[in-house]
Image 1 (cartoon, helix red, strand yellow):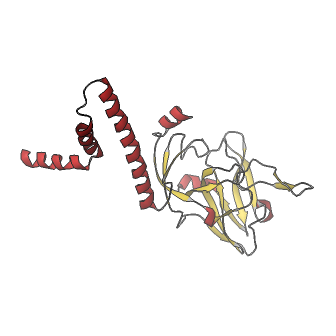
Image 2: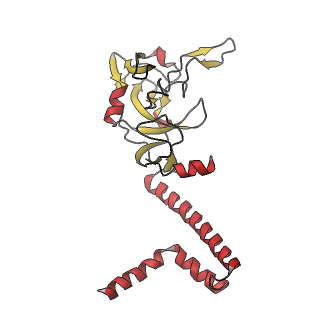
Image 3: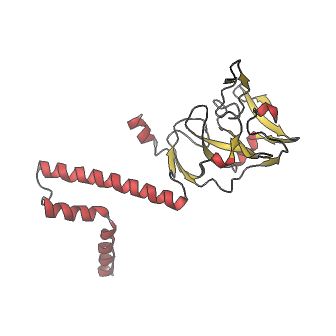
Length: 245
C-alpha cells in the first residue's frame, strides 16, 4: 500500500510546473546555494507563478465563455449580497433570470419616466428609495428581487461613468425596438434609484444632463450585457485592493 501511495505522489509532482523549473535551474546554474542563486531561484518562481496564474485565468475564461471570468468588488453598491473584496465569478449573459413585461412601444432612446412609473418610499435609513416600478399596468417590487436573490446579477459598461458596473437586473422589458434591462444596486444606503432613472434634461444645445445620480442614460440593451454572476469567493480579493489601491 505504501509503495502505491509513493508511486501516486511521485506521478503528481510532474503536474507541478515548479518541478520543471527546478530541473532547468539545477541544470543551468546549479542547486539553490548561496545568496545570489537563491535570489535567481525566487525570481524565477515568482515569474512562473505569475505566468501560471495568467494561463489559469485564461483557461477558466475559456471554460465559462467570457474573456474576464472574475472581478473584484470595489464598491459597496451591492451590500449585503456582495461586499468590497469579494471575487465574483462570471459566465456568459444568457438565460437571464429576470421578471419580464411586454411593451408595444420603442424605448431605446427614452428616459425611464417616458414609459414607466417609479414608486418611492422612505426606507429604514430614512432615505427616499425606489420601491417598485410599473410598466404597462404591471407593478414589480424591487425588494422581491433582493430577498429572493434569484434575479441575475450582471456586468454592463456604464455610459455615464465609463466603467463596468456589477448590479442586479430587476426588470426586462420586451419593447418594440428590442429587449432592454433595468438594473439597481442592492445597497439601501447608497443606491436609492434604478440605474437608468436619470430624469434627463436637454439644454439649448441639445446636451443631455441627468437630474439624478444615475449610471446609464436610457434603458440597457440586453445584448450590451457583458457577463452574469454564477458565484463568488468572499473577501479574498481585499488583499489586492489594500496592496494596489
